[in-house]
Structure formats: structure tokens, C-alpha cells
Image (cartoon, rainbow, N blue to C red; front, side):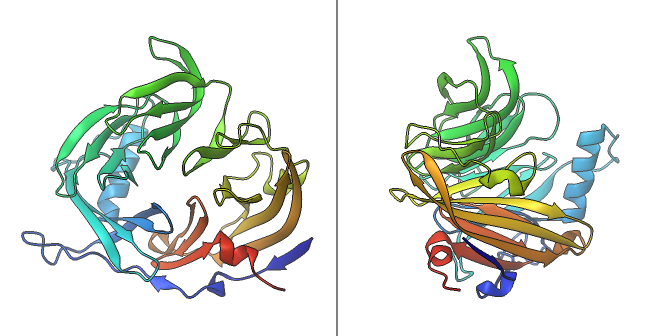
Length: 320
């Protein structure tokens, strides 16, 4: 097993530039509020008035009376390719405290909000900002992923009853936000979801990797112990490959954040560790925060507006 430490400068940084806003929003000042992995090796970034967004999120979480002003603000979501160019943008006015976004295969945008304790409201939005579908994803949503066929997979962090059954962990919706499977996710407590044709995740209930494509759990032994009591956050796998990658934060303090990456080979459901890597980046102010997000086979590491993407193929081919 090889143990190595490398900085975020392993790959050339791409600076995320804000999207241009057409009239009547020309010249609007935009802050980078959030980033999340997009389809393939793309990145999805949310731009808005960050101070306004944070104040609304605080008010929603702590039931603080808002000031007498319009609750609406503009948010622009941009999808970036690895060279920093913008593939698509979505622009809308929202009163939600901290909406999250996922791209659907048809080019529409899934919008949902996890702030608060009630059922999670969700909607599907056209590029022009028009909402075409709406629904509820249930309470306790911890993550949302989209499969290649447009299915929306939702990870929950609690039991809940929806009138049909009691579910823990995973539920499935179609692209119109209609539930298509009720009890197939019972018994799981997923960390983050990694989606392609199927979905893979670290099951915190059993400390096993679960993959709907492989149809069996993957035993990692003591490999995940380095990530702490909750285990890794993401489980990544290039479809069809026997090489898997565990990614997660394993150290945090006010001055830096550290990420542990463990690469292994899976044979008949048994994990063998091949390499371990770590990344450390200094923390800064909120607009310079470090953000980690993973797609199906790409690790995204953002420090402020500096974006480093590390495809698994490149990670696996590193020679030390």
C-alpha cells in the first residue's frame, strides 16, 4: 500500500467566473454560494447575493423574524466543463432559504430545499426559469442523486410514514417527481449517493458499501476506520471497473481541512486497499471556503473560486 500526501495543486486550477446575466439583470453582482458535482465531470455552481442567502438560511433554521423586505432574491445556477467554460445556466427568483440543485438528463434542473424539519419541497425547472413539475421528497433528506435514465434517488436520514409504507434510507422518484418505488430502500442509511446506471453509497447502518449495480454488499474490513466513526462520505466507481474509491473528510480544524482518499480493488465482494492519498487545504473566509463534492468518477475540490477536478482514472494512474 502506498501512502501519499499531495496539495490541491496536483491538477491545474480552473477559476470559476460568474455567468453573464442578460437584461434586466445586466451588471448584477454575484457571489459563489455553493458548488456540487454535475453530470459526468462537470461542476454545478450557484451564484447569488451570498449575504442575503445566508441571512435567509439563518432565519429559516432558527425561526427568526425576517426584515420587512421582499423575501425573493435571484439565483443563477451554472454548469461548468473542466476547462471552465459554461455549458448551461438556469436563472430564477426564489424565496427558499438555501435551495440545492441537480441536473436532469433532459437539461432541466431539479430544485429542492432541505432547510427545516418538514417534508422537502422539490420542483423541476426549465432553463428559462419556468417551473414545470413540483412534489415532495419526504422529510429527513440527506442527499439527492440523478440516474442516467432520469430517476431521482433520495437518501433519507430517518424513518417516516408516507401513507403507503415505512421507509428508511432510499426512495426513488421519476423525473416528474412521482414516487416509483416505495419500500426498496428500507434498512439503508446512506452517506452520500454516487449515481450512474445505478446508485452506490456507504451504508452507515452496516459499515458496508452498497451498490445496486453489483447486487451485493462490499466488505471493506478496517479500511474505513481512518475516516472516523461515520466512515467515508462518498463511494466512487467507474462503471464496469473493479477499482473503487472511498472519499471523505478525516480531519477538520479552524485552519485547514483534510480529505482522505482510499483506492481499492474489489474481488467477490471483498475489498483490498491499493493506495491512500490525502489532500489538505487552508480555510479562509466564507467566500473562500473549501468545498468537496464527488460525481460518479470525479473528485471536485474547490477553494473559493479555484476548482480542481481529479478524475478517478488520473488518480489511479499516479506513479510515486
